[in-house]
Image 1: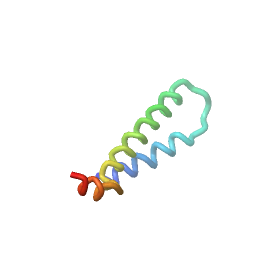
Image 2: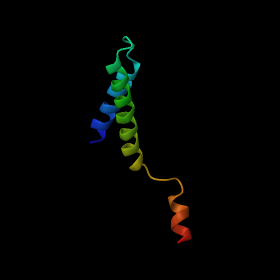
Image 3: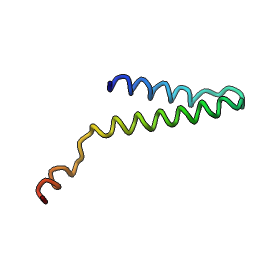
Image 4: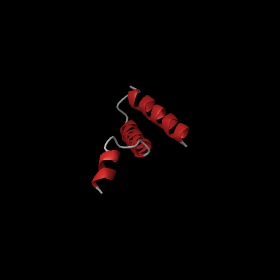
Length: 60
């Protein structure tokens, strides 16, 4: 699943770097690419442990 999200992020960046004309569909395509990139980044970052996790455990 992690590999699929990384591939989606790379494809989204590729779409964002395309410089075709100012067609209306390109704007929607780029907005969709930003959404895919941000959602993939959010899902990948949720699996990363916090630096302060040990401090929070001691406080409880």
